Amino acid sequence: MGPSVLRLWGRAVIKKKPDQTQATKQQLKLYENASLIANENAKTAKEMKFMARAMVMATMPHLDPGDVQSWGRRNGDFSLIIQPGIIIDKDTGETKSLGVPYGVIPRLLLCWATTEAVKTKSRKIVLGNSLTDFMRKLDMEPTGGRLGTIGRFKNQVIRLFSSTVSCVYTGKDGFDRKALSIADEQHLWWNPQSPDQVALWESHVVLGERFFNEVVSSPVPIDFRALKALKKSPLCLDIYMWLTYRFSYLGKPTVIPWNALMEQFGSNYKRTVDFHVNFDKCLKKVLVVYRDANVSQNKNGLLLKPSKTSISLNTGL
Image (cartoon, rainbow, N blue to C red; front, side, top):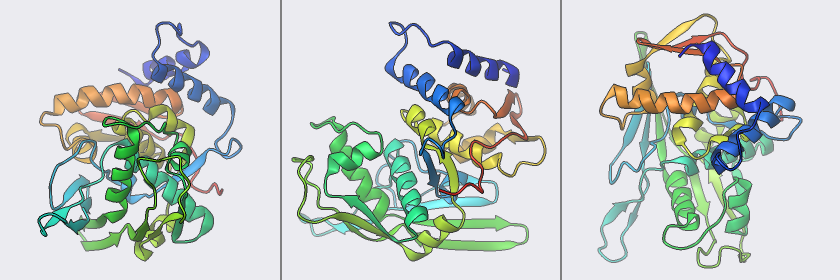
């Protein structure tokens, strides 16, 4: 599918919404946000956010990797390795992993925390007194019960801010590694059984100093309306954030091979063809909200041609 077809498809859904009786709620939100993005820039709409660059170049897992000591992805000479936090089990007295952050929730959390760090220039990130209020800031609807969002949300907050990430460069000219603790402290006073109740103490985290310096020195600007529209899929979020970052410095047409894309975005896939199918589905959705992206696919990989970035890297809050 060539770039003209993809962009025409994206423009068509903006000009004319589908029959609301046939379209899903997710599709309608995608079209609505695409129209908003086309009509007003993110800064004016107060929807401009930031994401940590290292977590755009290589991303967190889409699915739970299970009880692992570390997890990583590779993008060319750059590798991102995530090590989960540990605690002592109160029943057995043995250490156990808190788990690696995965899925949509930690991506939204990290975007919000990075934005707060850039905006306030402070390592202390205030989460607030109410769990439900904080979830709504991230455009998440709080629901209880075994399959609800509240328990999963708190679990991912703990996983993310307990993790350590290592950024490793292994190029021809040398070796470079930085280990970054995402948060030195986290104080969560939310009660999942009473998520609307205002706690006596304010929940907050204190970002690790090196992680804070990393995110405020080179954050990637993004349009939060795009994240809202794409938030049902972590792969869709990853593709959007990566494209707007990559187009900020792309100087000539470049083909990214499928096997390299799978290493970067989809290391949980066993076959390249399965990854390609899911990547294609997500790319179509991304191009609805990011119509300036000049992207096409061929048997060798993804062809990127210099394009207008979603939001300029020089744009301030």
